[in-house]
Amino acid sequence: MINNNNNMPKCWRKVTKPHLFCPGCGHGITLKQLGFAIDDLGIQHKTTFGIDIGCSLLAWNFFDIDTLQTHHGRTTPAMVGYKMAAPNRVVIGYMGDGGGYAIGLQSLLHAAFRNNPITTILVNNENYAMTGGQMAPTTEEMGVTTTSPNGKEVMFGSGLRGAELVRNIAPNKAYITRVSLSNPEGVRAAFKKALNNQIENNSFSFVEVLSICPTNWKTNAKDTLQRLKDMESYYKVGELTVEEKNE
Image (cartoon, rainbow, N blue to C red; front, side, top):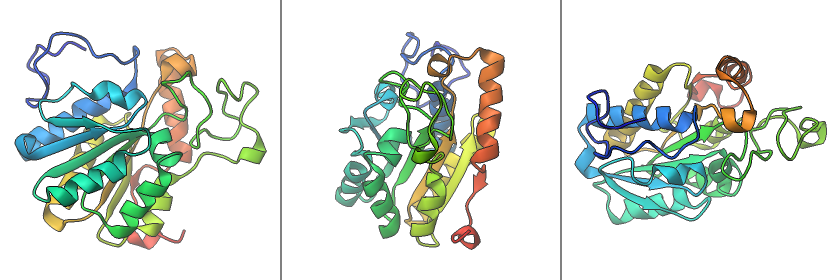
């Protein structure tokens, strides 16, 4: 992705190098939609962007906004602390399924429970992509990864529906949703709604993005999109309402 044309967010850092993600990776699409959301809301100069270790860290120079990198799984508490110190800033935490649903799950749940006014974005591609495609909490039952070559065993359960877990513990004012890269405009709209919830309602927001990882999935373009569609049949796409808390 070259950043020297007019089809890029205005808040994008003006560089001419392609991004560092693998070919076909969903992070580039996700971050582009986040950039458009920031542009749409006109919040570039009051936004702080926190990134996790993992593939997420490769977003360190995407945006011309204040950016900080945290330890693995510590993005949520770091951004909560930042928001407490600078309450007028718009704060975004960006992480993968490992950083949010494994090592960082406790911090994510407590931030949601406390209704800390930050926006958290979690990219779910059902594996630990940065370190070679190992099994993750989001890997579905019988999912093939480098650590489950014969498929994820039943004893490990199926994929963790983290957005539903967050919805069950978060207060009613929190905005919780799941979107898919099969609909980039929907991703952009969800980001805008999440950021507005932080700004206008002083509340916690969480967006899970169903993403693609053709390198570790070992899929071509057609099969990659089909697997994303298969993910959508297990991970329900859409805003999680208060009425769905106990379902």
